[in-house]
Length: 509
Image 1 (tube, helix red, strand yellow):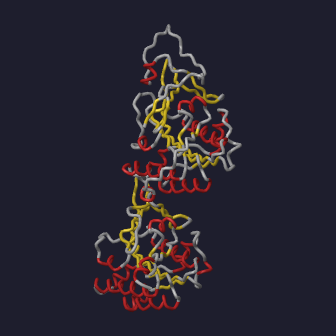
Image 2 (tube, rainbow, N blue to C red):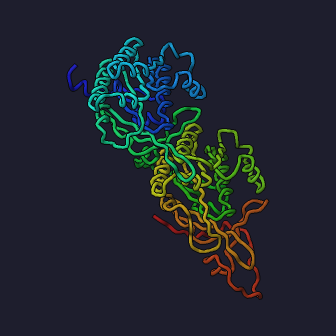
């Protein structure tokens, strides 16, 4: 085979056992490479190494796990039994555990090298994990001897086709010469964020192939080492624009759909911005129920309500969700907004979108999704990447965001950048007038679409959502502030919207 043909052959990858880490590494470790995993005690190195071994043997390979620590293998097995990847039956068959502690102590690096080569040969290992490399480094006579040991191990295992992980404590100096002896370096960290501790990893070096750069969060749970690639690194490309179909997705509320020139544009993103209790969730539920009627599968993904309370809230205003929930038309998923990882939530959300072929999506509560462990500078890029991916998957999304100022005219969202990232912005607020509170709805923007820009009062009752003409006092409507009123004037009169009345429309590019 000539050199040109060889260069066209795809590089063989060895899966790591963690789907998220495979995504970051574009498929896994390079076949026959030697990789160093660094991190302080408790960051997850040993779990990652064991998960790699178990997944590899379950796929038909052979693995050897060598410990250079004083901890017994039985004690390590006790910690691993709660992980879903653990399979007791493969141990001693295709997965072998070897202790190198006594050999290293008695014979030094040369004796350890002979032990490793023999273990790979005798067990026909295609994966080798060496846990506790720091012990080997401390036993070396010189730094040069330790680097030569690493280099020889890499050369030997590359020739035998054995992919190798060496696990060691975190090294503060990224220019440490030992890093030059391996094909890649994966750094694990446990970072304090407020009162929480967040696990993060970064591929510091990877020869022979591309990878997702930067830091990514991960968890240690019943699934083992679960990695959540950074959303903006994974979905950074602009989606291909689909031809405009002209199809509009309505709310099933004639007055609102009329203001929206028939409904939301297909594949667009909309933010319902409003004060607590202003009706954001109910409008989102109307959007999903209308989609269920139109045979457009919908997903509610929220943090504010439990499933039962959500259904009860809808039924209280005459919106029957129960017939649709549990069918392929409407899926309801709720999560407690505590100890969440934004990237993990997005990957879960996209999985639900794919599984249920969702066309209408409501994310009820943008704050729990974007806040917590998400740095403020990440928010615009994070949200843009999410919306781009939803658009690429043919989803029309509706999100709610809470403002904290009830009556002042200025907008005061606590998530900067969200308003600019979406296509459409609908503002819900309260207005205080004659010692009463009224709800007001207005459309602040709709990209590439006509819309009605006037303010509209709406009410929520057991009869559903109703609308009236604008208030008597234009100043009160525009400012949202109370002012002295002439007591001789009549109170505002509520009446139904006459759908025959022409709508003044406004176009925004």
